[in-house]
Image (tube, rainbow, N blue to C red; front, side):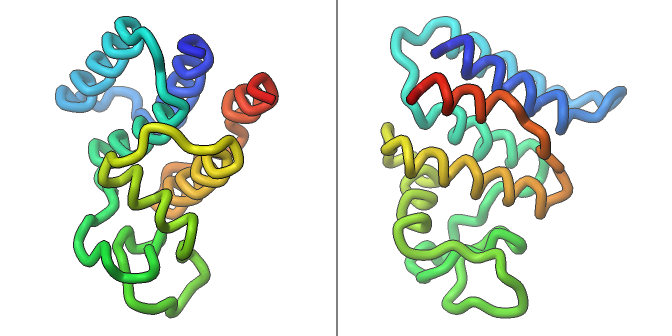
Length: 147
């Protein structure tokens, strides 16, 4: 499990990090994640999701927590909203509840189905914010091994 998570994180980092760019805060974050991963006895199945959320803050598009009571989250603009408008990148209902639980770090575990769905939502979120994570192979492999 730990190795699979590390492979996923490595693959994501290979796609989002810009060569020759020195980001001390990002480096420190990655170092802390690696140490945490090595020292954790048990890794929650949501760990890769928290990693994607936290990494987005270092890349400049962490989701806004304002107006979290609104019924939609606009993936394109990174904020909660009262209605869908102008595009199709909104989440609501159960997906929104899971997204909020992760955003506010209130959920340790998700069902396999919900976790898969949340990974896809976060990959879309990254794509909308100019970090194309297409052709990630590790998350599909991880899902196959968990079945």
